[in-house]
Length: 318
Image 1 (cartoon, rainbow, N blue to C red):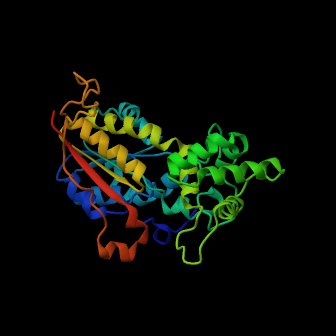
Image 2: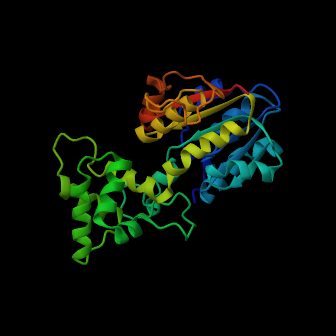
Image 3: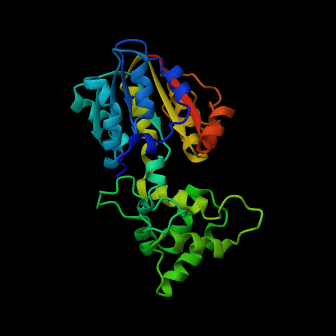
């Protein structure tokens, strides 16, 4: 675990924009549903002296760092070890019924991405893990998925979650390696296997395994399956005029947030010829960001990882 917070702080993206959208002013209660290392939480708590915040994260290592970072705010902050999808049960435990704002930053933190042993990145040779909560023995690792799923199932994950058009070729190579007695167990093995399956041009700036790594991370942690439920639960626990802000980092997440917000704003998504609406659309929120907010040139220069971040927000009407 990092021992020096200042040297290991993950730069929270769109920090200024988050504060401007959530508008902490007085004695409000906010939830940072993906606390990470506490950058957004620190910004919110610093704006108004009476503001309180509940932080949620499933990574115990990140929580330890965030707790030290936020201890200066005393009992104005409380931190819970849980998944962001558990937001309603966490608030029930905290004795809180409604809140003024909810934030979720769906990106992988630098702590996770830069920790070789976590297996999120092909920049290090490490066990192919990818679990957000590395202490959860019940969640299969990425290596376990590749060792047990069929070629079709692997290709489906890579195509749907990574939007990789060469998913079948990659899955075929992975299974072939497995059948040769060389199962994919490390990040380097996976990166090399993908590269051999699809090739790499001299001018390619992005490693060909990038989409495959993203797809496996999403599959391991069930990220997309729980996202829509989290969004609807968050709106439910907001007070009137409360705000929900969500930062995404790839198109699949952004699409779910956009469509869920539209549905909650009353947009019917039923086929045009349906005589009556069956999708349940009702106007519960007002969308505050018609187009997602993105990082400016200054932030991009300081934090290149912000380049793919998109921020959407909505306001609860009733």
